[in-house]
Length: 240
Image (cartoon, rainbow, N blue to C red; front, top):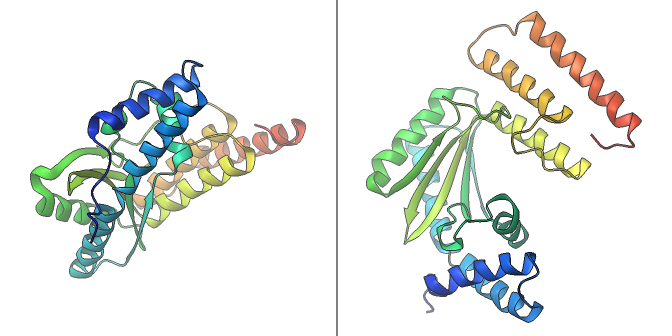
């Protein structure tokens, strides 16, 4: 049986990432790019088995903790890996990219304590193999994005675990829907009309999570920016 973790060496992965960037700058040939992309694809495939193991572990965790939640997994698309290497993180060493394999836990309720219980289980099980943590619950991103991100090591591969409540997932799905329909990536921090509106929506969600009625001024701002966005899109042929 072939080893599911076998793949290109770390040095060849690094070179492949550098070649992809060089091609985007016009400093590499097409045949060199094709060879590099083959290496990237082989490396990406080595995340499949560790990703499956993490997925199974999370499902067992939810069962033991009696938490109703959905677990999904994904391998980052080749096009997204290339975009990250050439645009968003142009200095990143491909062999150090930590979100090629990812699992997502979405709790059925909006009880943030359930997300924290899953986080505590990950800490107890992985311990020193927790490589990095981003707490966007305590410190939401400027965009309004909220979740827990925990990167763990499984079979020598970093796997990112995202933990969201149902409300947080709905917010993120709406941002992705705007991005897909309008052809612009609104998932990053920014000041476009869409991003301002979604930041306000996140503020409303934070109030709801705290059991507080959203302030009248906040609701008025949401309505005002939603109306402004609709008018803006109508006036510019659907572009924000």
